[in-house]
Length: 330
Image 1 (cartoon, rainbow, N blue to C red):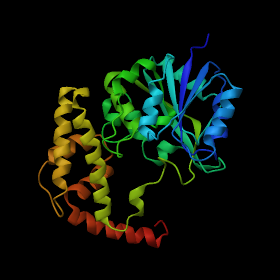
Image 2: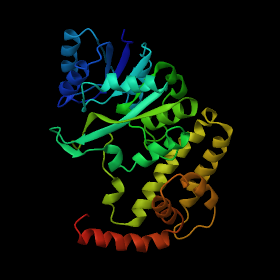
Image 3: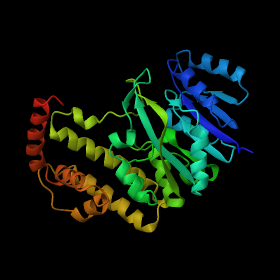
Image 4: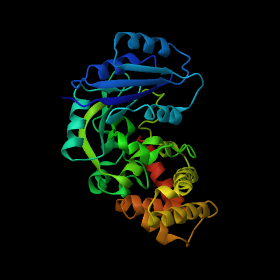
């Protein structure tokens, strides 16, 4: 007998693609699901569409929020509604392949894991393929394969895409409440990290989601730093991202083991110090190494130069930027 699974769908002004996504979820080969939807005060026709589906299928449980919660708190609201042994997260504008639920649960149970996550096929508005593999395009595959059984997978940056997650209900206690200290650390980053510290993750390399990119995504495939004209902009972004991440870690330090509590504090102080170092820095290099030693050599060197020797990184950035412009990649 199929065990029940709660699928959590947070919506906001999603009228353009919401029907296609809901249909793809309801038409799964795995039938014992509850689709729990929370609409965050949409101003378009999304609420009317959702009410229409609620009337047609008893598996749908619908909440219409009276005031806007924001993305993170809306997802937190849904997580608190989970009653089944397993839950999944869904985005309003994607398309699920029919076997997604069945195959992901199968993998989780085969590996006796607490959370399963996977790859995606990146598509355009009409579901035409842009990139066959999201994780390959975002250069995440190597790290996922190497550190799947370690907190290192999701410590420095996020490797767990939220809409691919299927997890056991008991994992929820590890990460609620979801932090909102920084927009640089989103819910799936936090969920993946907290579960990795307390349980076992498994990776599903098959692409069971068509991950739609349409210009209005909350999170997508755009590499922000590629649009910058100056190295100083790249450095400011990198520092802001890391400061947001480690500030969140420090303010939730009780959730980390003692060795990581110390590293969290050192990392936050290190990146805070770097804000004032505009040309070259000789302090805290051991902290940088502890954080980045899991990365590929070229990534390690690029970040080291940008963070610690920006005066040198600036010259290299300008040369690289001119070359990319000449060959039409900028």
